[in-house]
Image (tube, one colour):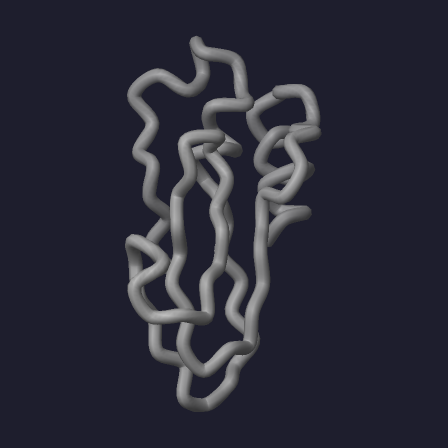
Length: 89
């Protein structure tokens, strides 16, 4: 997913490659919460009540979370305008 955003997406639209760090975070915790910080970073918390979005992962699958907002705001503003900040898959 990270390579798709950093390289393929930007190449497709003729943009420079994104160099923002930590665009994708990965976990296989059975339970985790995601916090969206003021610094535009995503933080994973294994503790209940620490994040904004809560997820149950009883099969202990490897889950990757892309910080699409951070990615989009790293792009030129003329490109970013009007784009949605959610990826459905």
